[in-house]
Length: 122
Image (cartoon, rainbow, N blue to C red; front, side):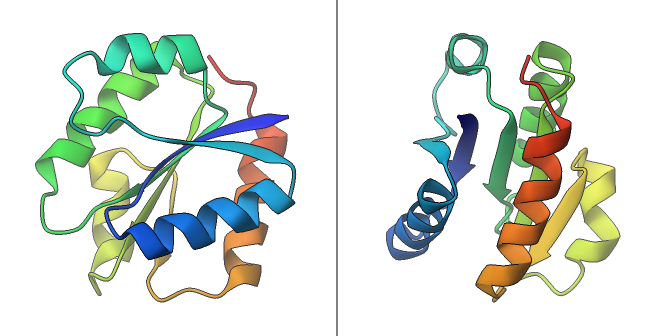
């Protein structure tokens, strides 16, 4: 079973994405975005993929991407955002791919399946 860390501040969107990914055979956990001990959480869960909303705060997601890339270099990193410039900024922050909100389920499934079949966790 592929393991996904998901950070989505909107509870309804988090639940929808979690349901979709769970139905596709993935185990989804909430990324402890504000946890001071994120290192332990990442290493103990060894995610295959991290999906993170990048809302207005671009510095924290960039720092988290660097940390996750060091701890788990094989883990895929996908940014989600309503920001119309996400296609210009996601790589600068350290993400591998992005989903611009709103996105459709097929687009989410296609992108996730590409990363969970390529990666092997930490």
